[in-house]
Length: 335
Image 1 (cartoon, rainbow, N blue to C red):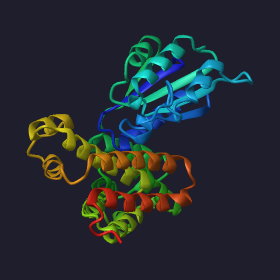
Image 2: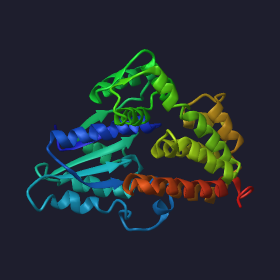
Image 3: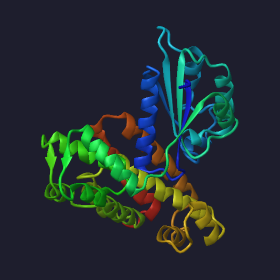
Image 4: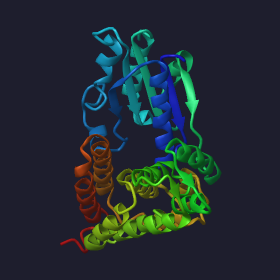
């Protein structure tokens, strides 16, 4: 295993694929006996930070320079994890590519997580000097195999239709499935019945998420906060944030698309599909500057959910919800 690794996932990576990418990165660090001491969460393009002038590198990306240049002061390897590396700007990609040309493979392990292609010339340099790990789009059949292995790892036995019900509730979202298995394992019950699954996990996560996004789009703060509370009973905050990111991405593409056909091509779905039609109908609902604010807010919320104490996660999502209601709904029902 080389000390430079790219973990690539699908462009529309959801929570499940993102979790799988992080797991593969963890395995790389373990195999090379490295602890990831520096984590870079690259801000999304189009955020306020992306448009500010910070020299060659944005503030969130700057820590990668000393990490790649110096390595550890105590002899062990320095581990660098770069999340959402596909969001690196051209100047950043050029600077990091130059650093990698001179990195010492004996002192640094660097793993780049990318949903899609890396910007050049970084992609070309890593392809020449590193290794690539591909994470494919998860389907329910893949999730079924993952679920069986994950249940064994937690010493859980899923009886009868328990496994099928979990897949019905959570689909291919292995991140949510893992959270569900953790809850079941924490209860101390080694054997899990279908009845327990039905009682504990009442709603499929995508149902309250659609209700939530509709309330946000209407600018209805009260309903949106209630839907948020409903979702957090069984769902994970990062799962909802990934859904919001996908919805915001479709909104941004719809605002820029010259016609419905182009939008469908950009999203990668048929023009007649519901998500494409919905985004096209609402393309004029949100102003361009408000979309930029929303992108920045979602990026900041993502960073807080991954770094701040769990006790702050609900408050972070509540504040984000109120802000999105103002930007999406124009303050029509905001009090």
